[in-house]
Image (cartoon, rainbow, N blue to C red; front, side):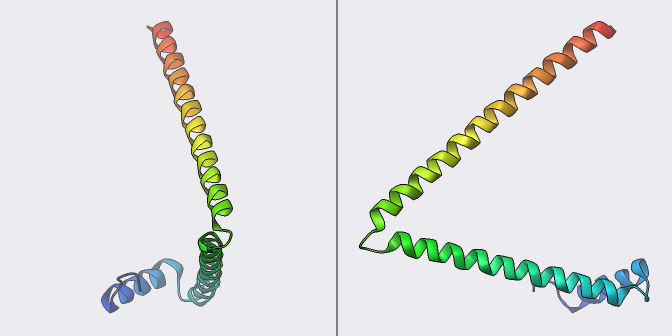
Length: 107
């Protein structure tokens, strides 16, 4: 369980009791449990979806077209990420130029 032992768990509960208070602690615990359960369900659904897609790709009969499609999707994602990084770098360079010009005006 995330590498948390009994002493750490007791310390976390004691701090939560002090910070939140005894009246709101049960309500907070229920809310956190609901969110963790929802997160776990989402993670499991994502894992199952990924495994299904991998199984579709690995099928011997029609795997080649799906593999090519997956590779082209990966290339598209790579291109989009590269374009975004290039735009971000250009924006950062513009901001640096503008801040340099402002410093020169203030000097």
